[in-house]
Length: 511
Image (cartoon, rainbow, N blue to C red; front, side, top):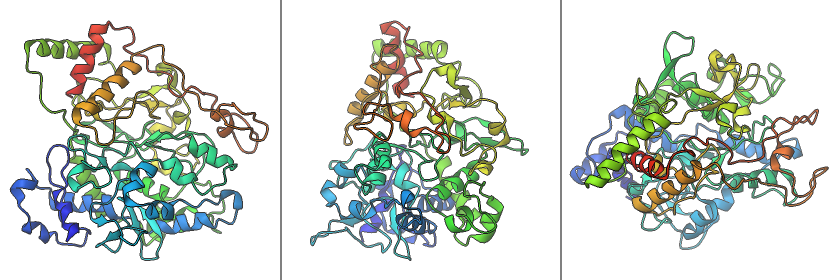
């Protein structure tokens, strides 16, 4: 069966991500495969289960998307373009929506949605049909992407070998998917149109009234990242571009699931005992009252799966004397120019990040994403951030890990610096996009990127920056973020000589 092709899925280091389609399956069908040709190292049973949760489990979140389409408040209704995506011909879907076709499905000769052996399959990776008939989404719907070390020959027909589970889909047009069914004059559609490919605003449906789309996070090398004392007696990873999901992997995962509709009616929607829709989610109450709440075993297994994923390593290594000299110079340049934050010593040295939160004015970077409020005291996701986060006294951006950076152009939290590589780019072509993005980032004279209204909206004339329109308190009209230049900031390295920049870029490519 075509579904067995999943057993050939490799992460960039060659680890097997195969066998079975559901957490309840034994994985015995993996015994029928030629192991020597499809993997170098087997995943543990827990890692395999975590992989299946990552790719398949929606926990009933599709009912939330059904509810949004018929929301009692017409101004909040939104019908996500699931039907339109799935009815787009398979050979046009990636170009139109940036979504990855499920290798276990095939085009329907009669037209319409793809044909899949898996009854929950829809033809699109990460979009799943639930028992209720609703469409729910999985972690992989955003975080799985095309493997930079093994790109597909045809982006419309990837195999499992061509899919990386945690790189983040840099090409997904999430804003188009959200806004497609809104009227052309609906102001929300203009907001969604402002999302660059590969970014999504996690506060769009649970609105904090700040326009703050952020890049879909890549996950790898978690074993080597710094951990922090968050006041619970044990140390945790700091997740989130601004360190918001810093209360541990379990809570970060649960928060993501609540954001995609899991347990909405039991835990988030107003009820007699929770009349305020902005009151913090009570995780203990949610766990108690929601039958679909992700079981602890699933959370543990997802964590195990994520911990084994390594950063994609650029093929080869410096071979000539000149290349070796450039490599050494680049490493020394990095230590002097970048090592203060992207540290090369201490627990985080293998990911090149101290994982600290840098105040917004320290980087001069566009601040809107960092101003998110849903994790603050008294807000919706307050229980998903630590007291350290809430009591820090300032907001900012977490120093991002740099291993695998050659695969993730464009840069910044909003994908505003550098080009996109072609989806089917070879490693060399992808590295070329990375190099161009690095030169753009290490420049103090970037052309400013400012998105504006294409036509008047209320009191705002055409040409008004989007931040002025969509980052306002609804009751008072107070401007919550007036930062309009999306590619502003992080000018570190701009004062380096041309040879030092080239050496630094060369060295980082191999990390």
